[in-house]
Image (cartoon, rainbow, N blue to C red; front, side, top):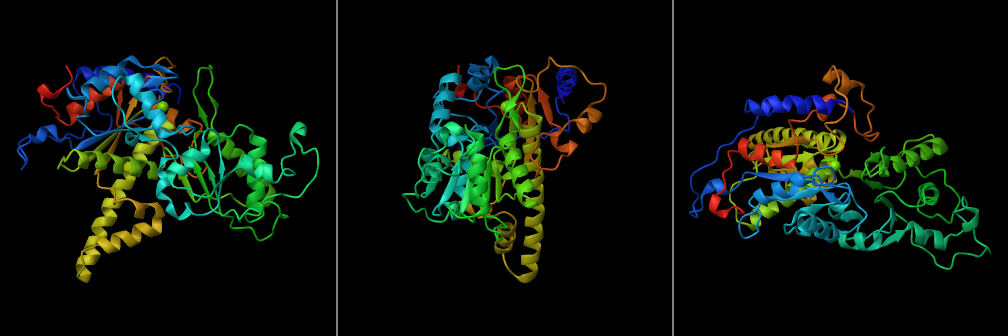
Length: 449
Ligand SMILES: [Mg+2]
């Protein structure tokens, strides 16, 4: 995969010269005229942006120069966005407001926390767990993050370790000096949420396994009847990530590989996830679409948001996720028409049939309105993980097929899902391309000078 991008970027240049940048075809939707309110309808976008952050807007703590240029095009002279914009990152060790403040500073434009989706953000839709006693694994301000998401009975691994000091025995220096019974009786732990990679992996692996194998009573012996185990929800499946070092670093996905394999080795059964959250899972894109629709509604834009453009630098997360959501939208449309047909035959409206079918497939869908976009287009930039300075392969398809799949165990590798709809050099070129595809010409008087 390391060699795939240069070839695509090279072909981009010739395609750009010819005025056609699409790899899988273009989706142009001309808009013009006026709506009932007398507002020029070509200033009301029927599309929205999903921006990845690392490798697209920033590299480490340094802004990518094209980002500031791109965002000047997205604002009017009053500093308001001309198009719905959300930032979708698999980062998760801080609050949304902190990430929004960082972005505002880096990009020089006002970003609200309502525009930021972190890996854990969709957990606010999983309300059935908010009142249960939940074990949280991760680092950073976990309690604050969980409280903002709606969790009311969260217990961290560190707190669990304090209550049951005999459980964590790997580090001899952290073993208890004296033996005593737990001073606090915990309620049964009913679910586990893996927010992100912890600091002390051995402690978290041990205590999570203990909770799973004791049906939520880690002070008890392991139980034979603990399978199927309690619900486990995991955010951010990235196996590795790119920092300042030459080679990628372990991500939360690596921690999950450890947990899954330890559980399998001990029980000879598979660790199951109630939900996998963060890119590339559909729930994250569904939530992003919901926030984009909310932004458009707040501006009283009447045109429905038909196309989402997901701009990222990582084939396995950004491109795979956007393409997967595109399939989900197509499938939802197919199921919607099927349900409407069934309802018509039964004399109903069809809405109930759709809702029931969706509830069975994805419990979180009932928390949001049904997806309304027609498509989600993937746009790859060459400023991050996918760099134009790597080796050029002789055969793109062969390169994709032979790539070691770093996606999560529960996500099937499909070469079509890592093929971007468009490839551009940077985020500024991506904005230009999308405005061109959408024939979007905001009133020049309203553009940032
Ligand atoms: Mg990235």
